[in-house]
Amino acid sequence: MKARRYTFLLLIITGVYLLSSLVSIPWRTLAITTMLETEVEVGVKDVIDDDLYLACQVATIEGHIKGDLLAASGSFTLDGIVEGDLFALARNTVILSSGRVGESARLAGEKVKVQGNVGKDLLLAGGEVNLEYGVTVGGDLVVVAQKAFIAGNVLGKVKVYANEVVILGVVGKDLVITAEKIKILPGAIVEGKLIYTSPEEAIIQRALLKGGMEWNKRTTRFLDIYRDFRIHPIWSFVLGFLALFMAGVFSFLLLPRRVLQIKETIFLHPLLSLALGFLFIILTPVLAILFFITLVGTPVGLFTLFIYLSVLYISRAYTGLFVGDKILSILIKKNFHPVLAMGFGLFILLLLSRLPWVGWLITLVAILMGIGSLVRVILEDYKKSRLHIR
Image 1 (tube, rainbow, N blue to C red):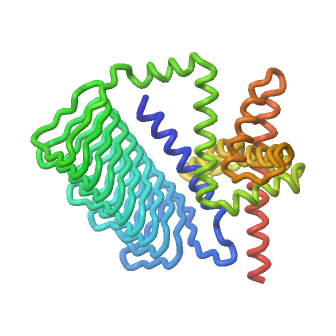
Image 2: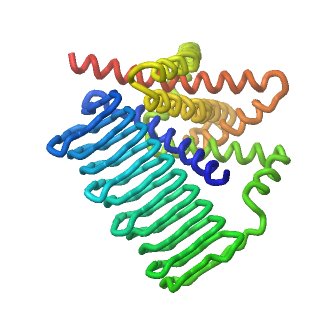
Image 3: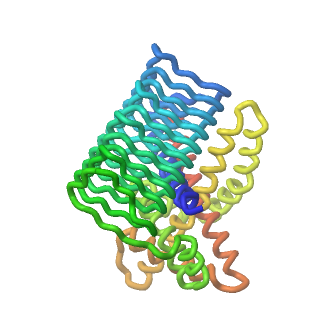
């Protein structure tokens, strides 16, 4: 259960990132190849100069992708080269020994296996995660899983959140583990410090820990702590605020100009934003159901619902930025940094959402306005791109 909660949080953050990516597309210079098929295969001799977005039941990439690759599929296999970033969401995700990612990779699935090299950072989430022997990760590694097996060479820091962890590889910096059971096998090397949190002492078999070791013994299980937090409404409010605020800040740091455009759209077109938000909430699940029952298949429907839930979650952060900016400008008559305004506005919105009778309505309006303004920004960019092409 603990690993599932970590995985859910990771998927929400990933959804926010993917959503931000959609907003950030420079439509006038857009160069994307999109594939919506039951089965997609990029052959050994195939070279794609663009970014590749695909959704299918089975995806096999043996060729050369010169841009980024974003995939949603039932089964995903990379046996070729991706020069840019790789985002893969699949039930089974595999990077074979001849596969290679030039930039960073973010992989999520029930089973995730990495046998090929990754140039920069690597993020893995799943039920069973394996970083095989001989793999080199050029940056940091983050793993969220039920079971994690790490035998590769990671040049940066490694963070693992799991139920069971086995370490056999080389870690270039600190190794931080939060798990129930930890085993570090002979031949493992940690250049930095091993810091682990667990109710049981780790089993360390002749591993080389150059930076020493620190054990934070946890006598209370995660689920017990979670239940204690749920008992206290204040904890529930604080944790809910922090999670939403962090997602909003993450979105702003990625795309500051677009987030500010969304805020201005709420101010200039509040009724239109409400209408577009209402249409999005009603029509998107219908669209996802149509994907489920057509030949395009389940992966596209799952990806649509994934984006849908991410939009629902992050939308209040955009409305919070608008509310905080307007209130602060009226009361103090001074422009504040958008992050401070977002935090203040979210705090006000979450307080108002706790009011009896009208709290649910305030939350609904905040969600609709945030979604609607986001949709309008995307539509306006698309219109400009069409006019430019003509």
